[in-house]
Amino acid sequence: MPEFKPVLSPEELMKRRSARSARVDLTPYLEYLQNIKPGYAGDLEILPGEKKSTIKRRVTMAANRLGKTIRYLRSGENELIFEVVSEQT
Image 1 (cartoon, helix red, strand yellow):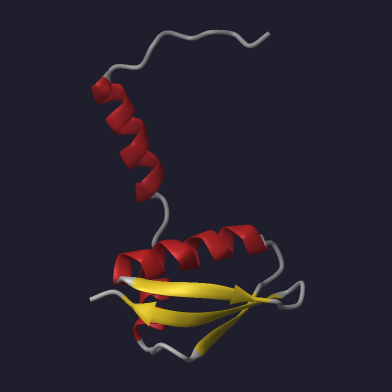
Image 2 (cartoon, helix red, strand yellow):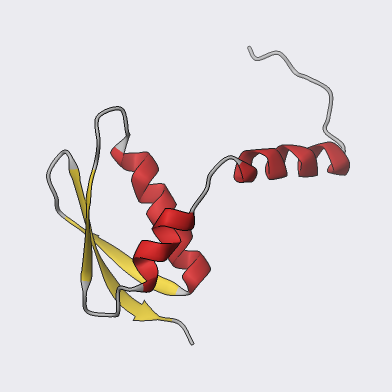
């Protein structure tokens, strides 16, 4: 059975949300994605110590921020390939 902690106030909840989102700098992802037009694909090398799922999540967040829709393609263990399907206007 989990330990039930006190209910979070809206202010505390906002602090926790902003602290979590402030940790990730999406600038490199945004810069990379800006140059990829619909129909083209990006290819990222996953470096040792990085998780593919983390990089994938950051790419998705950056794409959403830029108004782009992406689709992930099959790729190797240390690689992430995605296609920009469309741009929302």
